[in-house]
Image 1: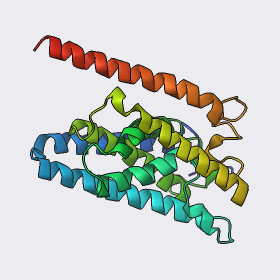
Image 2 (image 1 turned 90 degrees about the vertical axis):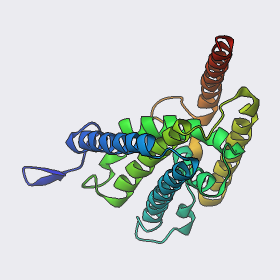
Image 3 (image 1 turned 180 degrees about the vertical axis):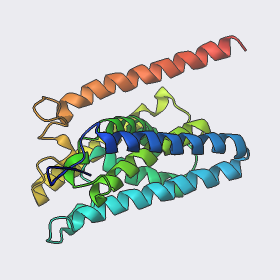
Image 4 (image 1 turned 90 degrees about the horizontal axis):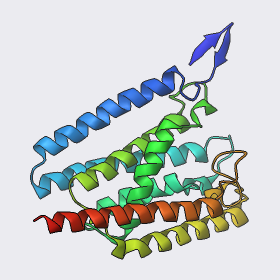
Length: 239
């Protein structure tokens, strides 16, 4: 929060507060992952690290949703349900790690959303100006759940808890179908026009609605799976 001629100026995208958050969160998350890689050498200890990260992620996303419930004066309990891809991904990812087994089907849908959604949103956090300071609860909890989502996915990959394979591509299909179905329900029931960006673009004044982003995302994910598969074959060839 800064002041200019007696007027409080909200945090800006790539402003001082936002950049400080990126730097500090990168150092803390990166340092934590480094220590986990160095000292969590057994499967048991690695699972403890993952569950701690999942608990932190769950606390962050539920704090964010509760802040939306009470944000506008009137209590809107339906706001407890995440109405965005990143929000629902953070919730489901935390639960999948806390209660699911290694390499469960949900992780095959959630890992790439958590990774790229978390990274892109922390860097391009367009919502940082919604309050007078970056510590405004909806803002800081939003930043934190994206950071924890990103960190948890990296830890899952680092500890080889996900076997990335084209054989699990259908998890993404069913996952997106569920998201869009929930989004349509929330639009119809609660009047949320921007739910899951079905009707409104993810970036204002662009055509990037879910219907445009879906094929782009499918192609990008296909390239990732192809690259991983080629890497596996190359590695097997030189063994």
